[in-house]
Length: 422
Image (tube, rainbow, N blue to C red; front, side, top):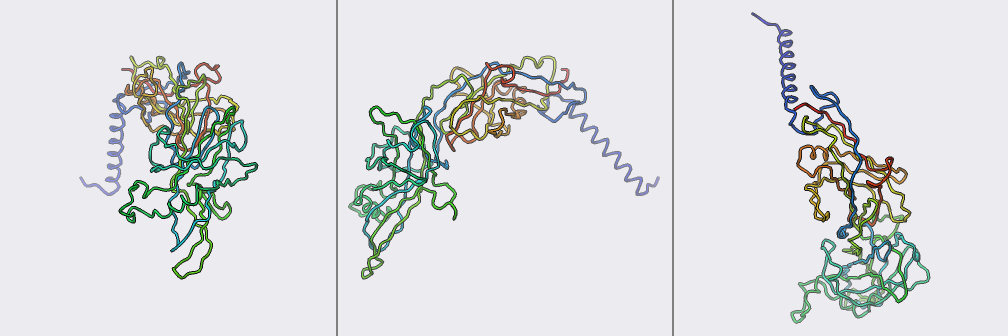
């Protein structure tokens, strides 16, 4: 028998259709396959179900401070139970052939602040530290050396640029500028640990008798974006010198500039705080755990394939001028939680982060992958941990209703799934 070209094309089409059907049926025949597959509302042989579950347990805990070397802001002061201090380091600028230091100062650009205290708190001490560090280090605030207090805030008026004068003394700056790098150290110089370090300035709240500092002041860090319209925003050290370019050169006045090479803020707060509401925060890190009882989903008589799961949260109206957390992300808890929630291991599943909008009181977070892990039995069923997506970037906070809220505001989990008889 001879076939023409059209006959061959028709036969190929039939074969492709039959192959696709076999593959589809073989995939659906195994309901214990990948949980969370896109079965749809009417999986072959399955029954589409939807269940809404309200949270039955929750807790909120403060965690150790985040590493803050990548933050666009620097903080100093105390408010909302948080005490903040700041480290700034400058490397030596390129200097002329010959120079003497006339004066030196640092300028910081005020970004804002929050708290009920003075707009510009004046009881903050500025210290010069003998300390080798980088902003990539994890620094324990209690190990910072005492340093030398060379000035305190005592200004009657302040605008968007704050100048720290008298850094620290002319003689000290002169010596520091002479330490170029370790390759040029005099062999008789014993203090070699300071060779490649920079000028470190430490801004710390200075508690006075009977005073109560209730203000967190924020400055732009070295990562601030500058352009021709904003001018200099980064922390900058200015050294005014009298110099000459050669042995026989004329004396002239110049100003050396050094932008901060490293900076970070350090926080101290009560890590034992437990709140009645769900809190999530950055900088001063707060995370919340919430639990859902899955007993309404029959996993004894049925295989369950998760098609979609959405967590709905409602913001709690707390009056505060703390910045609002930008976005949240849910994580699965791997093991059953004990009394020490901070030790709980979490899974960085592919649930997407959800932005928080100031004009909207509710958040809906897709947690399909997380619920799928529960159904597979690989994670602690029903537990989600909520955290800020950028704990190391800023000091911020958001508050949410928990399991004790009324029916309109309690956290709800809506699960759409397809079930198959076992």
